[in-house]
Length: 112
Length: 110
Image 1 (cartoon, one colour):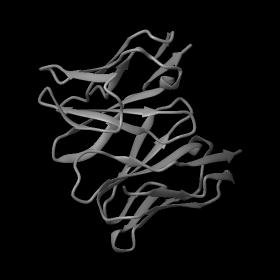
Image 2: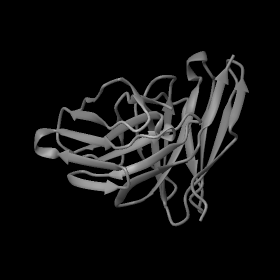
Image 3: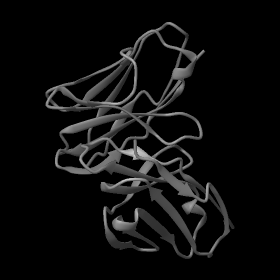
């Protein structure tokens, strides 16, 4: 049983570029959440997707957008990258109604 | 919004020692989870424990929701226990949005 998988593992971009991160949830899970983790901090909630709709959103600008596909996989898009967007981006999946989260290994994004 | 405070921020142990990590939260919660983040960044869910006590091998956790705290116990620590331990909560009346503390960084020396 595959857990939560994320790609790519590492990414280097320059300011102003756009990036897309991908996530496949754990088998049987229908809900995907994205978190941003800055160095030395706890993860911060970006948004959550269920049934291809954004269900909840944290305090992140509109430059951060997402999508969920019919197979429950998800993408996180960030436009107009800033240096401050450099962080570990974590995807977590769960089954709606059971909020125990399982995390992927993350994508380390560096913006130069 | 709800505040999640973890203590201590850093902890250094000799292999075989026991430890207690604490998580205080400022408001009622309907969900509390403990995670271990290994040096490679992987977050592992240790416990889903909104109340009561659970044990899993050398680890156990207790949440006293009425007093707004949770404790994670690590017994007979091993070097593989090193990493950062996070407490995360979902406030009462909210859905699906885990709020994390800043973590406790544990280093276990051989």
